[in-house]
Amino acid sequence: MNIITRAMQRFEEGEKVAIVIDPSVHHGMPHPRFHGKTGDVVAMQGKAYVIKIRDGGKIKHIIATPEHLRKV
Image (tube, rainbow, N blue to C red):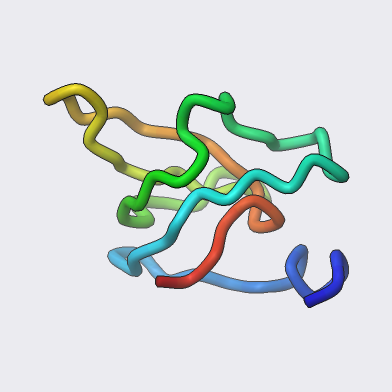
């Protein structure tokens, strides 16, 4: 899938997504410690998405652009 297609993908609230960091796009990149995590889309914030994940027994909200997200 090319970069333009990934940038244009849309997600609905409650949808499961995986965080897969694309190093060719620096803007909207989540912290590398969240690479490979799976979570739920909570909301949209500008052109990025807020993802709710569980990390170390805590709930965290990650903000990432669609280039760094994949549908599960």
